[in-house]
Amino acid sequence: MHGQTIQLPAWIPWAALLLIGGPALIRGGWLERTVATVIILACLAARAVDLHGWLQLEWGVFIVDVVTWGALLAVALRSDRYWPLCVAAFQMLNVMTHVARIADPQFTPWAYATAQVIWTYLMILTLGYAAWRRILLQQRARRADQASP
Image 1 (cartoon, rainbow, N blue to C red):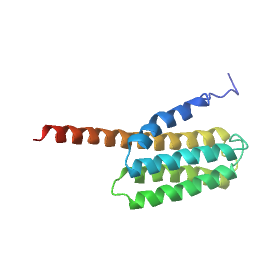
Image 2 (cartoon, rainbow, N blue to C red; image 1 turned 45 degrees about the horizontal axis):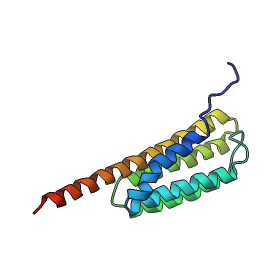
Image 3 (cartoon, helix red, strand yellow; image 1 turned 60 degrees about the vertical axis):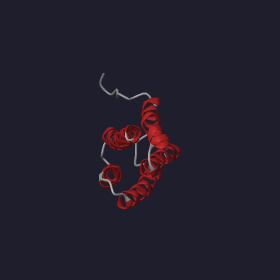
């Protein structure tokens, strides 16, 4: 077992993104749709520029992550809710993971990849929470409208 790594099948992150980002795109408000679109585009762009599979610093992914952080921060600053700040903070941690790799080239590929995956999943889960909450609030509002004379 020494030297082997545990790796999730490649379809799992995409399935999570579609299962969670899909409802945000379809039933969310402008905020959920915008954040979902930014995350989906960032994941596609990062996949397109990923050349080394985390064995060394991914400069293309770093640039994608910095641009994504800027977009998510702009959305968070325009929002009147707190969850977009969490998404932007998780993306900042993604960027800081790249910075740690720049500062210490001995930063292991396992730590580099794991940190990137964790922050990305936390962004997706936060978006899922926001979409779920919005859908529940819409359903309650519809029921209240139907119940009122």
